[in-house]
Length: 123
Image 1 (cartoon, rainbow, N blue to C red):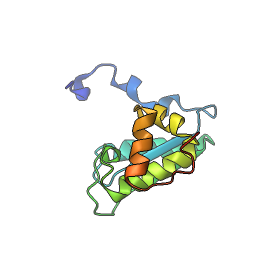
Image 2: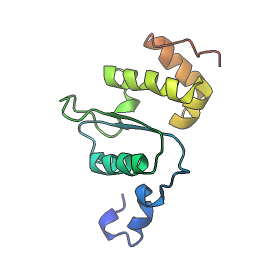
Image 3: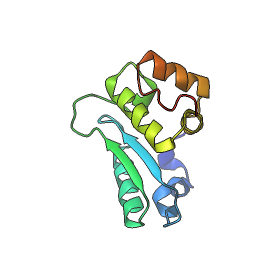
């Protein structure tokens, strides 16, 4: 793993520097044990300041011990809640799969397995 402290181009990795009012609507989740929480909060603030539509879900102070990748463990209720909210944001299982970087059949299987909203299953 690369040490970002010594990476001479680390500032290029800062998304808030590139946010304008043309930035696309953004869906953000932040676990209460997420080491990137401060950066996520900064990004949310910059997006809002630029009039970008932000759908942010922060678990700060919940005691759930949700790390940066908590969404990958769909055995947890918080991950299931976010998956359903993401479905609303992205409208179809195909778009949700694209955003999550997984296959559309995987999204459908997860929705069925956890008895989550299936109303968009045939989109």
